[in-house]
Length: 170
Picture 1 (cartoon, helix red, strand yellow):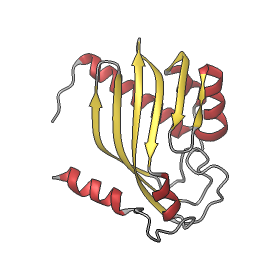
Picture 2 (cartoon, rainbow, N blue to C red):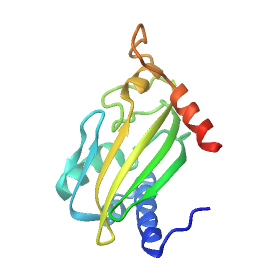
Picture 3 (cartoon, rainbow, N blue to C red):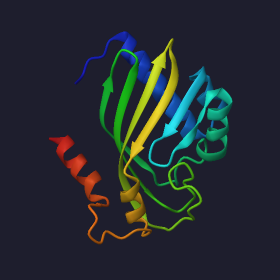
């Protein structure tokens, strides 16, 4: 078991409070965990926001309370805590039964299962989140819901997530 310092535990608790507020649809608490001038960037689709109002609008319109369908499972693979940021590596599994606007903007639910590795990098300063940079393989997501075909492309579906979970258990 990894032992964290008191400061590292505070950072982890801050990130967990932030994510839980997002999942619970609590915009006020979500924003209370952030600095006065944060930014959020979903790298694959360039969605997010800059500044307090930009991030708040993104959360309100695309994420908080709209995070995932009800069957979502989030499995942590690793958590790395640095002096000023946390890197959270996880596998997210869900059935695309509702709009997941932050990941699949303007794509109607397909009823398909998605299993995808995701990396969240959260910057922290003065016990507040300064930014979130979120990474995932969009080609894999689009393949899993049937919007693109592999053909001769080096695209994988849920195999990447399954492999990551398999090797992280050992």
